Length: 198
Image (cartoon, rainbow, N blue to C red; front, side):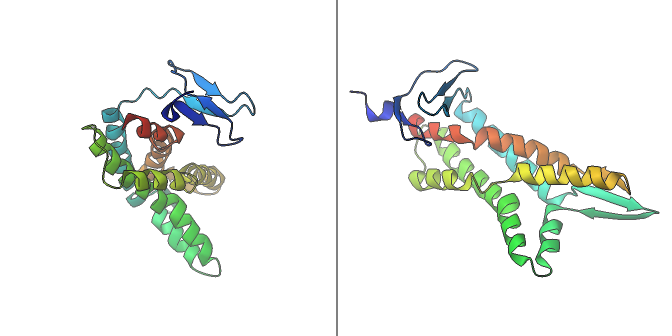
């Protein structure tokens, strides 16, 4: 019988499989439901930590620099992610502002903080204090982090407004785009590999 550390459970149908050693561009699929069990990651701990620190800098740029700048007849207005949350908080849809703040600002920030904490200890092959709790939080925060949805909404707004006003994408929009890709890469499902490494 296989060691429990060598087993993987499909999160969709609960079928149990032995982990496979994957090469570049390979994935393992569940034979019952066809969902992805494992993907080849190829990132070392130090590379993952470097990408996490880069993502933290991009989070700062995305939150404190304008996502877009709108100008009409000499009047200019810019909006950051915080401005969008504050705009939603005025009126009867305050709850939507809270959800937006959690999904585009708070959840990604917590993910980056937890990853930095865990990976900084993992660099010296040690488990961080509270490792299990941090890993559970990382798994719980993954569905709440919706930067790609925010990015899609910002791009739709830029294209819709471009026909009526002069719209320039800001530094925040580019930072948001790269941050979305980085978070998918470093805080996706393959973050579970840290359990095996440590």
